[in-house]
Length: 114
Length: 114
Image: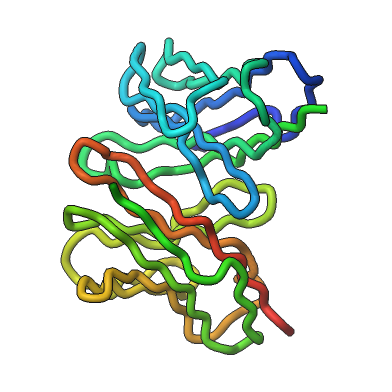
C-alpha cells in the first residue's frame, strides 16, 4: 500500500527538549510539506521541500528545522526555541507532473509539551 | 497575497438536510481551489478541487462545489446530510505565481443533528 506515514501518533516531551517527528512516503512524490494545526487557526506552513537536499521556510519556520536527505523522508525537528510547540503536526506531499497543486496528507502527530 | 475566508467556524444541520459551507477567496491570478475534510485526530482528505473548466465540481461522498468568479466564492454543498459527514472542513487556494503553495482557511466544524 502506498501512502504517507507519520510516527508516532502521539508524542510527549518535556519543555526545553528537542523532538523529531517522522514523515515517510512511498508514493514517489517529489514535494513534501510540514504544517502545524492549532484549534481555530487552520493549517500553517512550517517548511516545504520540492527536491532532495533543498527546502524552503514557510510562514512559521522559527523554532523548527528540517532535512531532506532522501526523497522518501522529510523529518521535522521541533527545537527548544519554539515558544509554543504543543500542536497537531501534519505532513503532506504532492506528486510529480501535472498534479503538483494537490497535496496528500499523512495521519498527523499530536505533540504535547509538558 | 492569496487568502481564504470560511464563514462560520461551526455549522449544525439536521440529518437529511442541505449542507452549505461557505468559502470566499482572494487571489491575483485564476485560482485553483480545494476542499478538504478532516475527521478527529486524522489527516486531511481531499474532497474535490477546481482548476479550470466546468465551474461545478463534484467530489467524493456526494459533495459538490461551485466556482463563482464574480462572487470570489467556492461554497461546498451536499443535498442531504448524513451522520458520517460530521467532521471539520477546510477550503484552500493554490498560490499566486511565485507563491505556489496552499493557503488554508480556518476551517468549519460540521455537526449533524440526528
